[in-house]
Length: 89
Image (cartoon, rainbow, N blue to C red; front, side):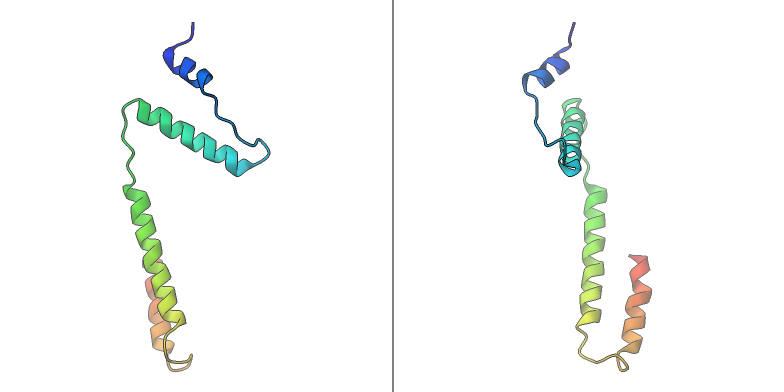
């Protein structure tokens, strides 16, 4: 006897390229997400959003350090400040 969850999976099988590990991982992630949301849980993206925000700040710091108007010997203190700030983000 098959439950209703199993019949919905056999009715609509998803296809992927078995030689591509990224395709398999994407299919597994998508399937797990569907199963979890179908059981009544909601998706919480707070941690992902925080990580993306921190990554954006780090990229901005790197861009400012790269395109700072002064050359290396004169901007030494500024670069040291950027290097010190980096691990805290």
